[in-house]
Image 1 (cartoon, rainbow, N blue to C red):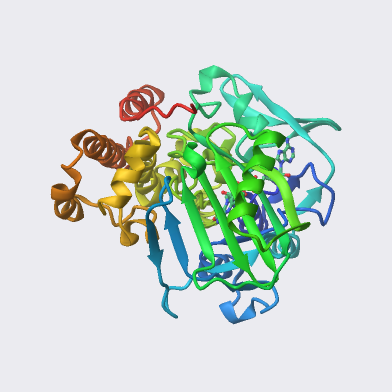
Image 2: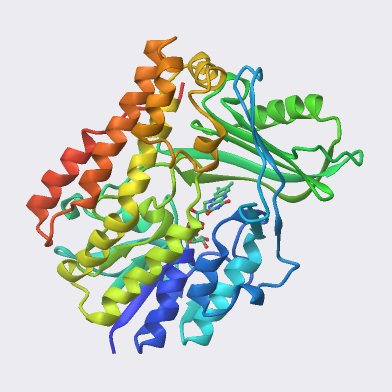
Length: 437
Ligand SMILES: Cc1cc2nc3c(=O)[nH]c(=O)nc-3n(C[C@H](O)[C@H](O)[C@H](O)COP(=O)(O)OP(=O)(O)OC[C@H]3O[C@@H](n4cnc5c(N)ncnc54)[C@H](O)[C@@H]3O)c2cc1C
């Protein structure tokens, strides 16, 4: 029987594992954490239906104790002079779920489908022979496989240790990831603001985003920057939040750790003979908001579909998964990256200008920029031309994003390393550099 190894218990890897084991493949997940300890101690926004479809359960099957609604949201401009408020309706109010039960459900589903798990084992690198991945090297020994599914997250040692000849991008570059700190603090006073979820763009003039969400008995604080966060920076930002929000307590109830989010377009090439990346290891998030759970679960399903249709682990067959993902989702996230990078290439005064002149509006922010098309932009043109430099920087990002989107959606029909290289090079030219300083 064909042997499949999944590196890391990432969301997409768990979905693919369950489907493939259910279809008769011999699947093993190798996870570095202890059994029962997977998932961050915080809540995430994602599409519950996507999860439930992957688990084959109705949405009503999600226990009321593991999810809740998030309140109305205010996007705050860098100089804090302008707030863009989003009042959700009953239909579109954001729902958030604790990460630990989410991962637990995916693991239980995989176990039920026949997937084996090896915990407390760190994957160190892929094993390769010529152009093929043949297994995984771990701190407990080597494991052979016909296919390795890379679900080990943004800094996957599988992806980053592939030989250069595979043509797969190995490391994120400057501006491709957000360094985040997240913690839920207690409330020192029982304050419940009318708009409880505040998102700060370029908080304190620094490239990145922070939020302060007064929710239930907690203050959920996220500090995100394009540069790594030191303890000093985290404490400085918490002190600033504490000044503006005197109800911020000092006891950490959940989280309280750093983590990294990819906020870039996905890998152009994410497969090789015996190898497929899924989720954060292939940088599958929506860059403007860092949401990756939906895309990861969807990609896991697509990978499984490809292999169930044809049990062939060659790059030629896996390319169908790669290509289909880009046609359905990769293109749109590349477009979104153009907007995100354009905003991050501006000085904070530029972002203030876009907010204060309503070039960026609540509809753009509610849809993570997905509503920011050229038609909508025409209406903003007049206001934007009050500062052409900032406005055209934004337009440049949108044009680059649209170009990248078209390219992603027209990936080479068949697996041909030369054609894929030429196509990837064209996409790389659409990049807008983001400097962390
Ligand atoms: C602060 C923060 C907030 C976020 N909020 C949201 C949100 O609200 N909505 C949303 O959709 N997304 C959110 N994301 C992004 C989301 O976490 C990811 O996009 C999503 O989890 C997909 O990642 P993954 O499952 O591929 O990888 P991961 O979640 O990183 O999982 C990787 C797994 O591999 C294991 N692993 C790693 N290295 C090794 C190794 N060497 N050997 C063995 N095992 C290994 C890890 O222990 C882990 O279990 C957020 C991320 C952060 C950091």
